[in-house]
Length: 234
Image (tube, rainbow, N blue to C red):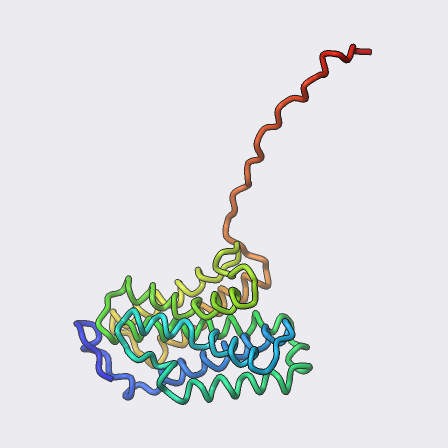
């Protein structure tokens, strides 16, 4: 799968960079775990758990591939993604009591998946000849798209619509990766720094309760109570 465009012409094909394939499959695996755990907490059946895990793991990647013209999307035609989802869902089901002992397990695996997908999504957009802006946006879509699908399926407010630092962390990771590739930085260490940047922002924001600013809702002024004209004051 060769790239096109001025930037992608300087980047080896995906098959020449197994690191990025590993990042994508790793992100698929950990995102699938987060989806399976969230579905398990909602007491879904086996099919529901696997379905939610697959949507979380592959939803953002499918959106990204459709945007850049990588058709059919890798999450639909590459058997490795389905195998990764099934293995992750099986692990989450079999080891659910042990995984539950982790502090906020869904958020932990979600942060890992967010980091891997933000970096890989930005890289793949560059590989298809898109510029820095498009690569950053599609890196974020890759990272947050599956989580939005999960939250909608489980009837929860998506994280990117709350005050938490979620999409902002994905923007930082995707922008660092896209900038590094555009400047010709080494692909041996650039992806790992981008992943660490995204994960650190997300994890530290959870640990220290960092949030984006919110604006107080203005309550409408209450009209003064009208006095009954037939009622005489005391």
